Image (spheres, rainbow, N blue to C red):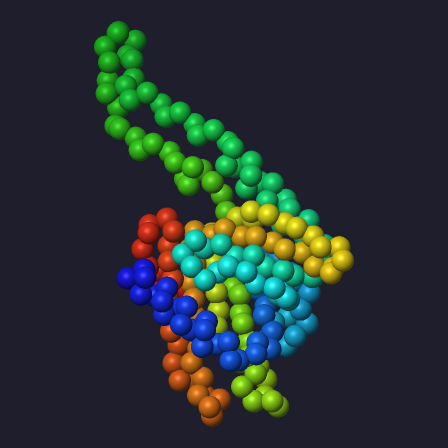
Length: 209
């Protein structure tokens, strides 16, 4: 199953090389449901991030790096990166004893508890990242959505600024990654949509997006 949908997605990416993207945008939603606003003013993609470089996002590692214009929002991502680093270093609390001593000296066995894992105590500052790759099928038409990359439950792994280019690279690591591909006809009509995805926690296919 895993090798099948990865092959299909790789084939999809290859088939898109003949199409020149009209623009790539990223919509990023925080864990509390609010959005981190980007600098796009393009119709339908207002306040999203303008992506000038996209790395990763093509396999089940669920890792993506976006290159975006450097702006004030980088402070937000750096705060998230620091929080994610701190959470991975936080020791996992010990579970209470499986038995409780009574005052009289006898012992009552308690209900066994599942051990806490890092996954259970780690918070995700970003609930969803939706990356949209658009293409222009006809010269005088509005660009259409060629494909999307969806990430859920993500942390910020790194932030790097390039002063010379005025851009910043943000690397995300997510629990789930999904791919959506729109098949357009030569008449600029949508034929069908293909979806595939992967849940890195359960190790199973994921298409619930």
